[in-house]
Length: 480
Image (cartoon, rainbow, N blue to C red; front, side, top):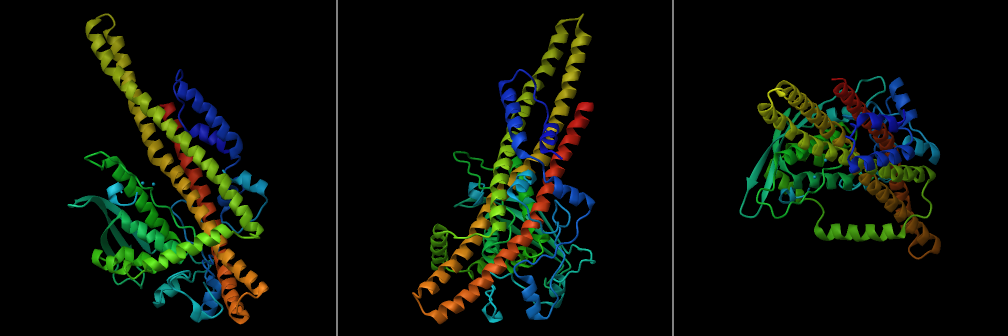
């Protein structure tokens, strides 16, 4: 299915005579040509039914073998999609054809190794739950339905004012049947800083998994009232989606920091945060990462070259769609604000024109109905399409970070191999380090490849659903 006609159908026609509308039509045409199809092959496969993909996570199979458990199967579900498609590969041409959420403080609105003993549970490796039930949860079979056992709700934003700052907290209710949780229901309050901490810890623990994006930072200066209801509600929805995407992920959902985030009281969470790596350690890791990123990789595998090309094309297209969608919404808003003024004017006019009174009142009634229809269409655009498109704009940035972290892991291995070749250090020590790094690179690559197919299928389903729903809403609106 070509994205161009879908997008043209999904977005409302702008009224004629406005310069911005004419320019926007040209922009939409430009976007339509290079976009190609919205994962035509992938969507056809999804419609025919997709099989469950065995989510290796971060070398899940070697991990299962070492513990005596069978390798894990069954990919998790996402709010936006079905089970992931089987792994696929293709040329750059196929990728092009397949290519097609706001903050920090509320102030601002606001490796694995061949030796199991070398596993670092707080850095690269996923945290494996120790309870029998959680171990069973991580072993799924292809003929077993994926039962959801973790339900999260983010609601009731609450403003807090102190002598130092003003911020918003959100209530998080968690209901679960997992054995590793002490209770079946938890209720905590979290601010944006806490969500940011969780995202950073997930990236540290799982550097090549695709972590869902957080809403952006938002800074409003020179205002006494820095919070408005629309913004807070938009953020609440984005935070709700962030947590539920993590809960539906087959690996991230078992992360220990995620469990602490959902269950710990405020003072317990603060204490847990202090147990993380110290400032000097984080600075050292940052310097090392920068040095490796500047060095780069000599030979990135072909499949990751194709993946990187896909991300670049996807980022360009989704950013353009986001820009056009925002402009269309702005045009609709201006049209609506102007049209609202005409109804009362015609009513006043009818009072002074007896012969035209009925006609003028009829025109005023028609304008009122048009206003209500336009407002409903705008609501659908702002709630159904814009958030989905913008979320995947943020996803495109996240994917670039994931690729950079994968390259850093490979660059570290390449540097050790070069040192061994030139014999600049102890050969035995370098050989041991290279063995560990080879395992780490293999696990990072497997984790990214498995998560990539899952994310791509969810992306296609989410965007297709958003445009289809918007198109149906506009058809219904124009029919009325």
